[in-house]
Length: 110
Image (cartoon, rainbow, N blue to C red; front, top):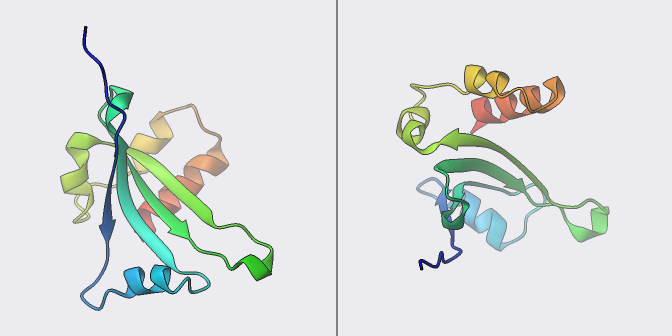
């Protein structure tokens, strides 16, 4: 009998000045984290591209996480801009048009 071990794997992106890291470390209002995240216990090869935006407690707003799924084999062509998510997200049919539009917008921004 095989036992699956739950694992969350994340790869974070930043620039040479570590602006994203420092913004998150200092909890700067509006600081963002861009990451690839996948779950090894899912049994599927889907990776999520995520952007998490920090909100200060005193604003009364909660931090926001936006994400969209991408198949593992498409990540290396998506990152340099050789593949866009427009068609893949629209074809899913499981999301509302507003949700699809939001994911397409996110895909174009990251």
